[in-house]
Picture 1 (cartoon, helix red, strand yellow):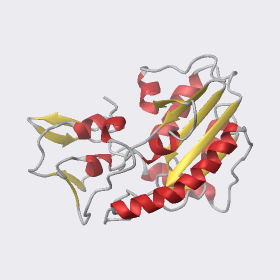
Picture 2: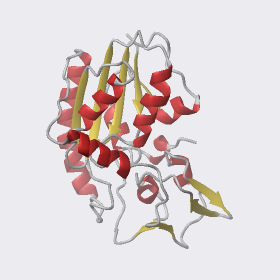
Picture 3: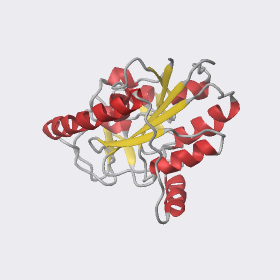
Picture 4: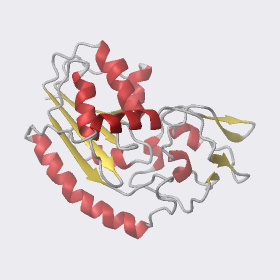
Length: 254
């Protein structure tokens, strides 16, 4: 039985979750969209693992469904599961995913969410401490063990909607569209090491004249802010960095 996980991750929480699924081949959604990786024709189990953004699906997951899955023969996919990581609660994100998949002729078999340390700067300006990270990770591990067991048994768990879910989906789509983020800036501490550019999921950062420069496709994942080794990325009012649950080198996409 072949299991492939299409992963979108920024600060690494979703990668941490994806790694809990035994014998799964994990690939960034960027690899699918760029043509660097092609889903094998005989894949029968597909996982989607991603963070909740603005109470909905992150833009790269929507693209993976509409631009990649929609243009291939998915007849071998017998079991599609999803794990959504979140700092607070997922609301109707998994139902939103189910609807996106249905739009390209696919059905979500199982969807679950797990809470991990929040790295979203507009809501949480002070980064979680290492002690808080360890505590939340320990609690998440219990939930992830249960999710893993359910997926290995191929349980069926179809997420349901609730009041105003379409309004919330529209809000999420609008709020997470790629755009220029004028609240992020690069300080004089930047050494031009290129780590921020290598982990940016939208290739929104270039190194020009030895300094990181932002373009106009930011989706506010804040991987650059949290993973900068020099703490050279500033966000107004924010303090500290979330070091994450995986190594920075595991997040490099180019």
